[in-house]
Length: 150
Image 1 (tube, rainbow, N blue to C red):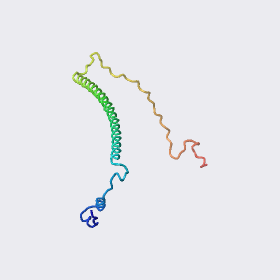
Image 2: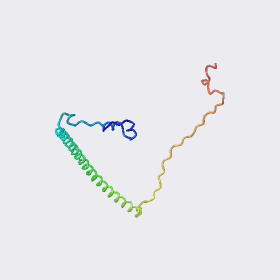
Image 3: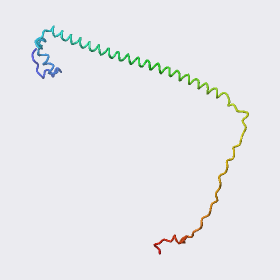
Image 4: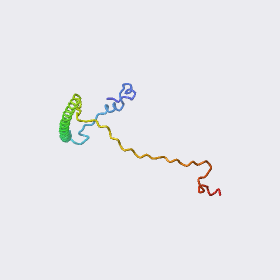
């Protein structure tokens, strides 16, 4: 195939790098690696089988982990269901008890007599003693006069 000019490629809308890759023939795989195509295929097959074995091992590990998680969640679900059933039964019993108490009036004891509250002893009262009246500017006694005035 003849080489095209860049302007021709741009007109056609093709990338110049792609056009050059198409124009140059690729060498045979055997000449690049120095091995025959059969040997290369066997090596890639062995590599693919190894990858498949690794992936299967990972899959089995994850499957075992998921099964353990499912079992744990299943036991937890059963436990929660039992607790919910117990709570529902207790709730039903309490509702019945409340309804029974609402329907029957409280029983009054006929022997109960009214007793007035007992008087508590009064606290002693104290008499307020009046203070002596002091006039402004007049000291109460001689000790009240400041010494700096003397």
